[in-house]
Image (cartoon, rainbow, N blue to C red; front, side, top):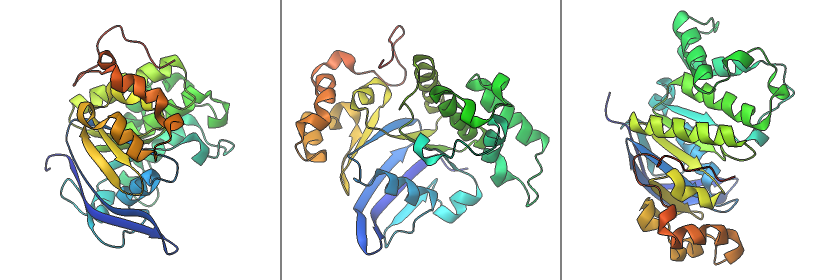
Length: 270
């Protein structure tokens, strides 16, 4: 298989005649944790949907591992961790069943799990310390446990690209630390992790790359170069209240985590 990479060129996406994302271009290579930063409605979710093949761009192109999106879908190369708001927590499904959904792309039409599917599910749940809760209905879980369950589903899918939508919202300290450690491990294994987040203060903690988006990609590159007050002002339209929490991290260089791993002894955002 070719080296892991994302190549997006001149990508516009429109809904009902309204342009949600203008000509966006982005290139990411293997072994990257990239923060996707922008206001609500800036195009972050649209970019994710385009990468997963859920929306069709008007023009331009998206290549993942040098493959078009249809081939990417067939090979299960992109895994997704949704926002909590996107999930029906009352649906009568267990933690184990949710994680098994990450293996559907490997199964036949009858969706009968093979030993490899069962093994991938168990490994995913064990990595997030949820194996003992595999029979729980998802609505019975805490906020952190819910996030870990869907993280396990993404791990079970074994995709090379991992998209996370607000993964740290409403999680406990243990889950926060665990997820960051796992993301760093995945980065070291050569995967690409793209994280959509409103938590600007977290960007300098573990993201070695950052993408700033406001209906188009305004800037992207190494966090130390792109995550500046000037670029944040462009991204948020000059609204200081939207990015004031990040300004301290921009100005305080001691808050920036070096690539490729977090320094020992550092806490979480809480």
